[in-house]
Image (cartoon, rainbow, N blue to C red; front, side, top):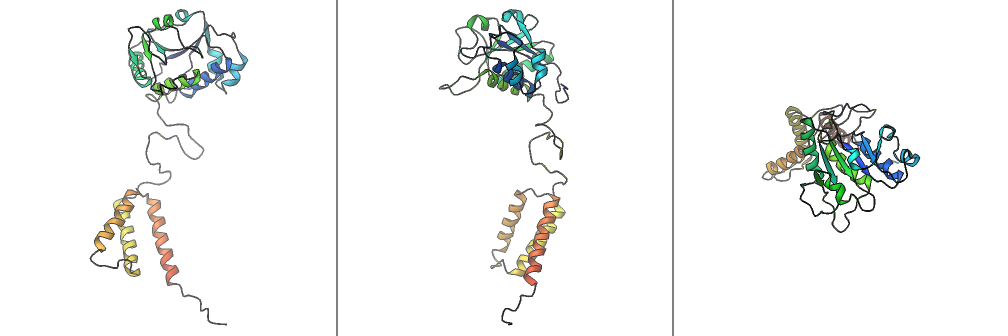
Length: 269
């Protein structure tokens, strides 16, 4: 797959230790693909490899499944790495730094920028990584989940950590569509238009306030300035586009024409 939305071409690998179900491997592969990762390393898969159920569950992330490597033990899967992050839902009785997924993503990004290769290890569906496996890792990663129900399945855990890594590198908030290019930042989207400028807003306010004067909307001359400020503040908060200003002025003109139109004489037989 192309890396067109990834600034940094060096990526962490995902290590699944002793996964028990092919479906879980497949959904983990799908989560990896969602966030631009492709290096999957599988340690001692219970049902062997390749696994047709893994491919089916990957929902099209075939390149991840096809490129997955199988290893006998965590040490064999990580010999080329400089830093390994061990995901865990519970604290362990060992001296080791702990990071949130967000902190781990920033840490691995800095390490990889310095030439290090990194991997993230995920344990078994039922009880995760054992202490000996965590002892082979450099940093523990713990997500801030509800302690009353802290268990994540493999795909959820992979997605969570992969997302935190990817969001530091992504150039857009998603895919493009037939109607518009991808969104590159949060905020108000204005396809085929632009924010209204101050002259356009001033013309709209003059138009609106003039017709309201004619209609007798401002009952009190004393309160008129306050009411005008409230109306202007209301429309300023709306962050109107140029097209919306034109539409609103058209609405005012249409209502005025309708009000001035002669009413039918209902008394004529």
